[in-house]
Image: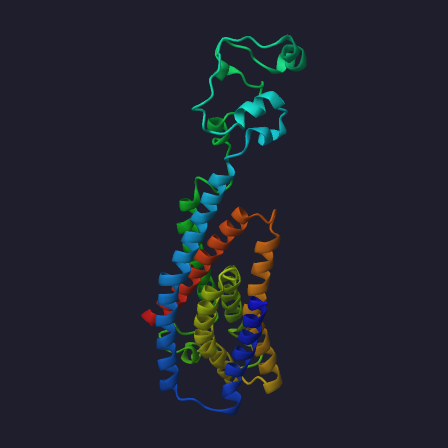
Length: 316
């Protein structure tokens, strides 16, 4: 419900921000101030909140995997263990008042009952069912994501940064002049000649908005974090929606068609957030380890996308 409310608010806020150029006209100086504020907020959110939270969540998945490897002997690989041996193993840890004659041979009834399932040695420590796994061996059973969590941190971060870089470079192939502007509106001002058939920035902005939705969907389990990410997304989605509407108006699109493009852009982040949360919820078994691992990976990935947007606008 919390994620649904944030998604609806994001949809309404983005659509209203993009509708401003259709009713009002803001100066470029004020838009630059808003862009500068969004850069600082994006950088701070990525470095101080999203990435650290993703790393912490990823390592918490590793801890969950480590604890899940401590299995009770009676449940290891579904093997049958004699009840007599379970009684000895499951006895209280306080053995101060217990004395055992380690040389007493087993009774005939015990041999008849368990026969080949029990190895009988002089030392009672060696009495255990064939095929049983002790705690040391059980801890060696591989658990997904247990030993290589740190290897995925840099991979997810670089992947998010690289994907946004590729999207930006592909979009720039359709422009005649290099982008050296400061504001999102001037970013597309020197595009190729106007016309409804000209490729618009809608596709690139929609993909980026969907990446923003990944951050929101991955943080849905943490209400405080999801609200901070929602606020950061809305701050930089407002000038993006404003820029999209302005560019489409300059290219000669009709107002009804502009609103359709704006609606698709506004829907991208909420849909991305809901799909991300659904994928986390229904991917494989809904255990805490897999949920925490994928949540951490997506948070770090979205942190990389935030860093690219912030650094790109900042260098311009």
